[in-house]
Image 1 (cartoon, helix red, strand yellow):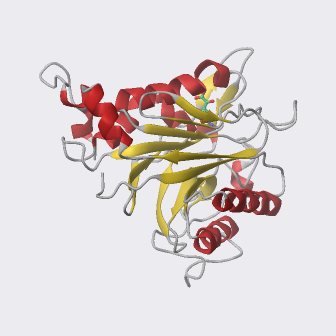
Image 2 (image 1 turned 120 degrees about the vertical axis):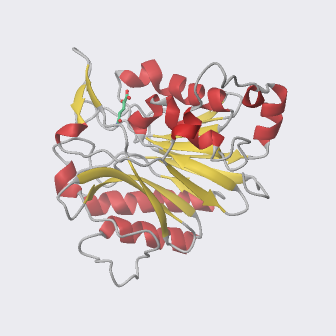
Length: 306
Ligand SMILES: NC(=O)CCC(=O)C(=O)O
């Protein structure tokens, strides 16, 4: 972790998207402003915040995302092609916040579509992106069938970014939370002493009314307690019954002891929670699993990362 580890207010936005992209962007922006006015300096939007969530929608809502370092005023950025990028870059800059802009369908020059989160700094610069690594392909008879891989390509790179004077944060998207390796690698960092490991994993997501009640909270708490980190899960609101994908909601933040700190229900809203990176030291001192691992008995996955 970086040096100062200053506490921060984290804002998570739970809202329901509709068919009109520009309305989705302006509603998302209003909610982000609300979170910032409550003191949030790091704000998160849910998975697919510029479009309805569904494989039939991804290609028509997809946009190119400019390369890291770009801002809304970069000469390479087209207002016509990348309205979501521009709106989010301007928002981060106006509000002077770090913005984890959940995800949007990203189109690329080689005709692929990714499910991609954009991460901006308070200057409105794109720091990095996270392309969903594990695509949501499931079939539960009588429950839910979904096959992202029909239209989406999978990302290949774990994502960690740094908030100066606060610490490192890892990002996964929704189904990525089911794969403990990503959080484990991020929490351990490059050095085995974990000093550059993340203090928090953030997962913009869109679980549903079949798998959400089974696993949303359980997975968040599991990733938190295994790694003794904060875990933030940011969902769309439920939306109207029978209309489109039934998002689970229940946006929540889990603390490094595995405790649910704060949670929304199914309606639209903003969750603001203070996260204290230094807290990890106390939790890891009290239950010292970080120094008791037996890599002579099992492999250390954090060494296997790219
Ligand atoms: N959007 C997603 O990846 C959904 C993941 C999900 O619902 C799950 O159960 O996992």
